[in-house]
Length: 97
Image 1 (cartoon, rainbow, N blue to C red):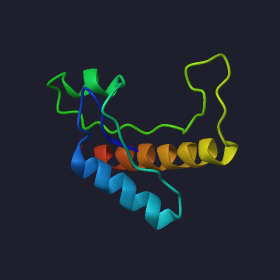
Image 2 (image 1 turned 180 degrees about the horizontal axis):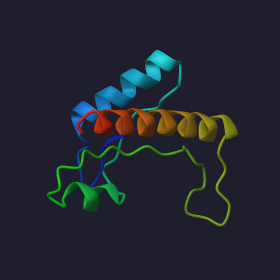
Image 3 (image 1 turned 90 degrees about the vertical axis):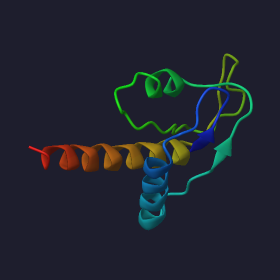
């Protein structure tokens, strides 16, 4: 999970929630801070819509080439964490109505 990149700082509360959830579920997470490069998260968090943004990505070797290499277990863990985050967000949103 990326904490900071060239164009944004992630939402600290949502980042902490995701990191704590991953730890609780035994999903390994690698923290990242980047001084260069950015993601679409930068554009989203500046929309003034109060959307909390965190950046979750799969570690990839040779990312900007014709062949990126990553471990399937990293991909699988990301999907598992994203599904759980999505489901908890849906449950939280539904409790507002």
